[in-house]
Amino acid sequence: MGVEVGAQVARARALVVLRIRSRALAVALLPAAVAVILLAGALSGRLVGPGWDAARWFLTPVAVLVLLAAAGIALVVARARPAMSPTVPIAEEAAPDLYRMVRDLADRLEVPAPSAIALTPDCDSWLEDRTHPAHGPPPAEEHDDIAGAGKHAHRHHPVAPVLVIGSPFLWWMRVGELRAVLAPVVAGTGPSAHPDIAAARRFVRGLDAAVAVTSAPRRDPVSRAVLAGVGWVARLLLRSCRLHAAELERGVAAAAAERAQAVDYGLRIVAQEQVGLAYAGWDRLLTRVALPAWRMGRWPSRLDAGVVAALTELSRRDRLAEGFASRLGERPACDLLEEPGAVDESASLLAARLFHGGPAGPGPDWSPVDWSDYPEEVVDRKWRIDAARLHRVLDAMGVRPATGPAAPATGSPTLSRVLDHLTGPAGEGSLTQRCTDPSRDASLTHRSTDPSGDASLTHRSTEPSGGTPLPATPPEPPPPLDDDEEDLSGTTPRSANLAARLSTELGREEASEAPSPSASANAASTAASPAAGSPATPDPLALWDDRALPLFPLQPPRTARELLADHLTAMICCAAMDTAGATPGLDWLDGPTLLHNGERTADLAPKILTLIEEGDPTPLRAWLAELGIRPEKPVRLV
Image (cartoon, rainbow, N blue to C red; front, side, top):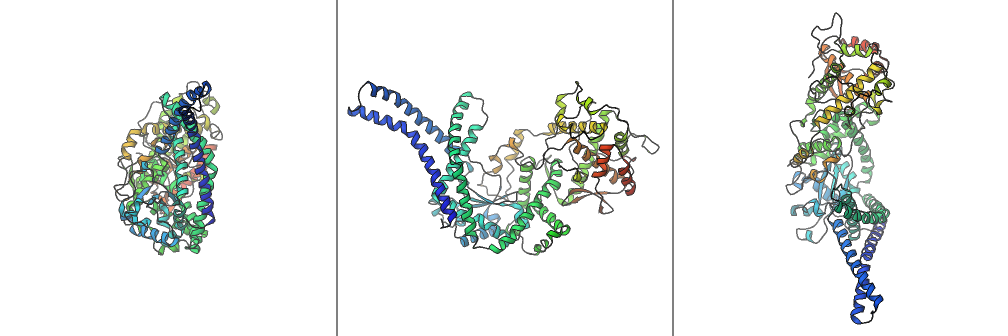
């Protein structure tokens, strides 16, 4: 470890953590030490008498019990599996140039090189210790040279941590920018290799893992009682170490930043701008483009490549981003991979699993989609499924088809039917009366917990919801949800009633389509990509609980008002495609969009809100007439 001030602070804090561990061990051994002294005194004839005999009879079993309890706690702490981030492992054979760049960077920083490299579908990079036996076997011998050690020296030196890199960085950043951004991260392997810091980190991670083990639900009362005591001790020690462990990590980060100043410092300042830009583009791509596809049971297989397209489009629209696209002529960091397409596919599948909770591997109901097929296979199908659900709910409510001289005699679904219903007289009663109906079925008030709902209605015109249609069900009187009453208070009674029924119908569909835990576990066993990791690397998807998915929900559940706006948008888009020659499209920043004569249409959100809140279809009908959309014509549903 170098002479950086941060490194010295980190070592001092590590020694404090180790002293806490030593004190805990001393407390556990103290009764045994006293019992040994009393027994030795009895054998030597010095500590004899009724009082000493009573003390020996009392302290000896207490010492044995304390030793057994300490051994059990130590066993749980040692065997508990520390948390490991789900990543896509990258073998050296799959990215020799990337490994070579990281090794050269470590040599310039005079620190040990990371033992392996992995990718995460996020805009962040860090070092992760995976030396615990539960994390799988140590790296193979052919990877020992990346840490600067020979085949025999690997047995005598600790294994360096794994370098985790955000996959969007590889596609958006240039090689020089990636090296500059990774310099402070790689520099952290120096303090991590110090024995005191490594031991302190292992102790804290073991305590944290032990707390997780004791917090897991169990039915056996004996095991619950035993683990409750273990958890109390682990939490006590963890609270004692918390402040010092935090200062230890701050010291390691400060030491790494200080050491990295000697390598590409000027370029790193420029590269940090790209980090923020990549984060903005990645978040926009996930929330506006990927989530609509995930809801449809499709996952875009080239998310990282989509980041480049999204950020390029941003630089074209936003003057603040001008000049960033000119970097695209330089060598991208993804060229450091042998098969960037296969790695991008693995990272895209992992992103869908983390942010949406999708299955661990492809299947009949979870298939990849290319960007070129996105408008037809995702946007068009999404709109038509939403439109079908809307008319299915209208059928359950007993709403008649549209009437008029131009209305179809076959009773086919039309946009006029929806507009006439939302602008007709309110005959269903007030929202308060329907909420207090005692005949409502509580089981039908289940609302969607889909985290991909957009919180703003200003973007709903280009991102409608989707789902798989179910057979028509008998009419039922589901009232609005209690937590949606305030959201629907500013709408007409008919809009509120339709929104509540749509929310109920969507919740019923999602409940019926939820995968079983056993199916997820079976799919996880086949989720590893052969191009992204070595056969000796354990599948990271099997190391975290499927019940916690999605781990990082992107957005809160959509309200009933938003669901109604989504379905109205979908119906309008279907009418535009079937009667005015419009086509579905993909906007890299806004997601699904409607194209008329090759150009994006105006935002529909204000006109739809006017219809929902005031029951006034005049602005919407004027827009339909302007584009030549005929609401009385039937539309094709799924």
